[in-house]
Image 1 (spheres, rainbow, N blue to C red):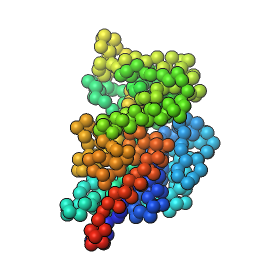
Image 2 (image 1 turned 90 degrees about the vertical axis):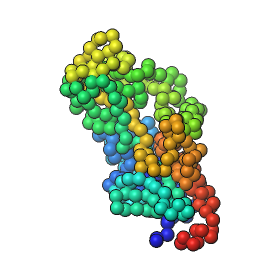
Image 3 (image 1 turned 90 degrees about the horizontal axis):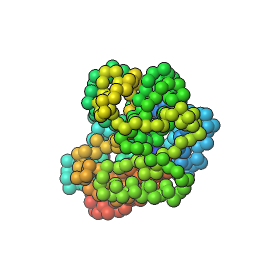
Length: 359
């Protein structure tokens, strides 16, 4: 059989590219398997109206300058171009398009190897770094009557821009930053209503580095305990930016509690009140794209994957980056460095005799 790789990275977004850079610097033989046909990670799929002025900041990849395109430039062009240049400049071993189906233990249980499968293709590896993010797993909660709705339902994942909603009564569901941002775009062109499960928490203080670190620490603690990861913004709270002030003056951020059911022409609340709607826009977030890891049984009894830093506690051969506290551009860079360090430590524990025999 071919000699196994020292590591396989799944995903070529910010976390995957950062990890690959640090693996390469350590001389660790690896490949990066990316499901997309072109560089850019999830950024290439963002809506056209998202400009660089709208994003919350893009951190520089390791050993590279921070991208600073004009604020009016589309994020789904600027960031993928930055990623593409980075891959080429550092000669990162990205293979695409490769959609990984599952990761399993090698049939020879004594080998300690992992097999990464994508259709008929397979890669055997000593370690794995999962950097698949969340974009491919939009989450829409189940509500009574949803199938009867005669209007349009769509998720942030498929947001087509504000003009699509012009003149259409739109319910925006969700209490996160994306809901606030989309209300900011839609409210000036149509009638909106904001619906959330819990009252939104607005940030009244400055978002200092200390506040950011404290928020990340809380998410890290959840992940360490094996709980499903929460978003950092759920801890830091929400804030309005200048481009959302028009929507605020229009009353777009006066929220209502969640409705009890969905009807063909709208929604109904617990008190019996009915609200007409033409569109329901679910800004209800994403879930980690980790179903391909199911054969490794990494999930804890609490439903999440417990991590020590980036290392899966249930299987130290596996690192997760872009998961939980590292699901941001800055966090992804730090996680990439740590994951490469942990991979090197894992490889160092492989008995030299066994490694030579397999080679």
